[in-house]
Image (cartoon, rainbow, N blue to C red; front, side, top):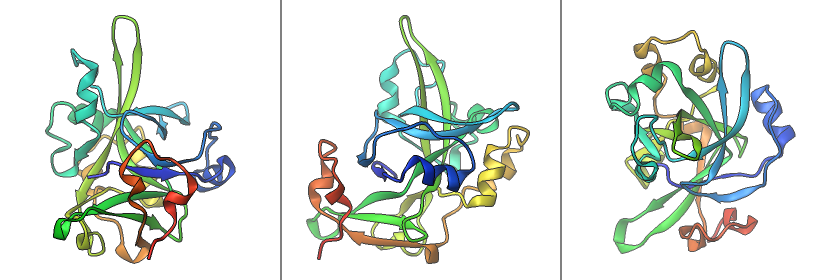
Length: 219
């Protein structure tokens, strides 16, 4: 799964990496579910970056609290689950990050690791979004898609978020692409040779902690 990540690169760095305008936003070293996250989505008119709430609330949901249970969507069933299948065709997004956390729970311990891509460059998770309207509010929310772990991630966990390379991002954001087989083919484990991981402080375990030292390697 993916339940915590980071984004502290500057707006200028994100614009260089993704070729579109980004709003200003605070650096975050411990992004958690239910918070606002930076995402990119496309329509026939434009590609746009903005803020979504992490934890998908389907448009048809009776209660917005369902979002707490839908921070991730499994790649294997994203085209069949009622909450996701229509979004796969029409409401795809990139969730922007520059690292994520996973925990090694073997041996009775819970050691967090930070995982990065391409020497800590910004990257994109494959995501889906939806818009929910309540009596007095409208919430636009998202989920991050996960897949089986690559060789590196298998050392600590059996799942990992889907990270899209540059070519896959173009297809994922293409509003004219609605073939579910094509889209599902993009939801593969990322190249382990382009990734790195290292242990970090257990302070990460609490979403109340959010400061730069959280991403530092511990011995």
